[in-house]
Amino acid sequence: MTGERDADCLFCKIATGEIPGDVVHETESTLAFRDIEPQAPTHILVIPRSHQPNVATLAAKEPETALALLDAVAAVAEQEGLEAGYRVVFNTGAQAHQSVFHVHAHLLGGRTMGWPPG
Image 1 (cartoon, helix red, strand yellow):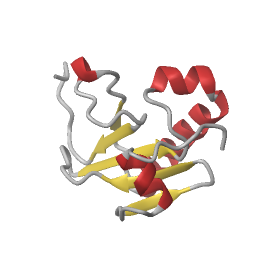
Image 2 (cartoon, rainbow, N blue to C red; image 1 turned 90 degrees about the vertical axis):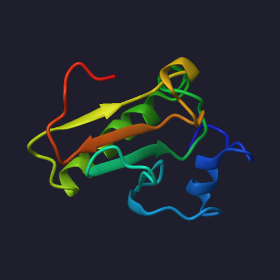
Image 3 (cartoon, helix red, strand yellow; image 1 turned 180 degrees about the vertical axis):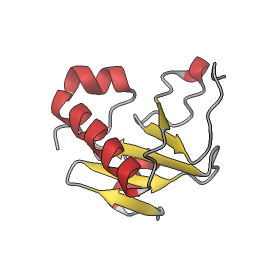
């Protein structure tokens, strides 16, 4: 793991086990757990264990971890049986409704997704 942890970050605390999460997949550098307020039948958050505030910063500072995050998204989608389709969303910044400033991918599936989103 390249990045640091933030002692005040909710997702860092879930990644270390300090706060429990409904974990569905984990690797050395990533963790995936069910969202506590699901917006689709399948709604899983996939995070790096290291702390970066958003996906752009993760890609710039930890490109290997960014790739591992995307690999984890694909593995979880397969594990959850989302072969009919799924959506991956990265909210970046408060204006995009990012509420936890630890990069996380929302993996959404299990139903037809409307377009355009939002």
